[in-house]
Image (cartoon, rainbow over all chains, first blue to last red; front, side, top):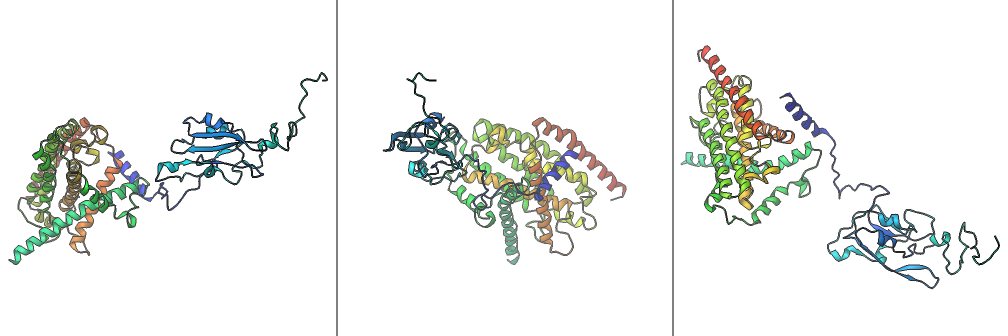
Length: 171
Length: 318
């Protein structure tokens, strides 16, 4: 009997509590920086695409929502000919971001991507590519990786020794 | 001629008022439950969500008025009408203010008890005519619950009748001039409140509906306006029980300063808020607990209350 009265009182006291609900469109909460939201493709500090079209993101994707086609430009740099993410399938797990060796694909704190037409949920490369570097600044894959491109031969990257002559006998 | 017109006007005022308050309660309930659960409740449609109710009503009006092919058509249609009719008829005897009541019967209280028993038929028939298992289970529970709670609902009021010496609600209110019956009849008040909760099938006693076990209980098969009538009928029931508690235990329209109608409505709203608070805080009883509470606690309590009240009134030579 007393416990009934106590629970009545307890519930009544909640009338003076702060409301937990955030009135969403009127007040938009700031998402944390690591929020796994809309996926973007970033650029390196020189303004070139970071993506080297290695297909690791597409392979890691558990729902298979990423489609891309690799190709090479005249400098010998690999890049995706097209890069397509179907956001109506995407589950925002972030595995593509973990798989990416070049920090190219990143998840951002943005969740407002509703569409009236389902086709509009499919983002092409021009929709995904941003002008900045995203979350990871100062990283340029071709400057640190031992891949030869035009204007930079093997062994000329940062922190890279010249390649060993595997046919030579000298130590 | 003038008398007839005045009576008609009173009917319009009382019934129109009830039909205005009862759907409004749906909104009040949603807002209050939200308040107590630290939510906002409906606040999107119109200013502070005021247009939510009209929007819901429009939606219900345009829903298909579906009668399942396996249902007993005539009874299925009649059932929702009965619950609303019974509750509205009871309002005829509730005195809102001095002179503002549709009819002053000398057996008003018995009339109310009879009408509230009629509501059982609506639920029993609605569940039966639906011809499907969950509604039937719901109406079985409803009948068991309401029949057993009816017994001491009536008995709990007899203390008031003994003290007032009349079945007429107007006389009962007049008899509370000195002291409201909520003090000498406190036990009766508690028993009547609990019985009223059970009678209106409100949350601690909403076994006939029991969403998480019986889909929606006795009105599972109802949709559109028929469902709306059941829904509004429940809120008319709450308004009725609150109005009666005010009339019988809290001195009806009496109170200093303000006009009697406002006193009556204000007291009624406080009780309705209490009903909603009870819904917001207490879990549903198990069926055997419900029956145990009814027959082992409330019934003896109301009998003892009646005996003691009668003895005291007799001893005073009343």
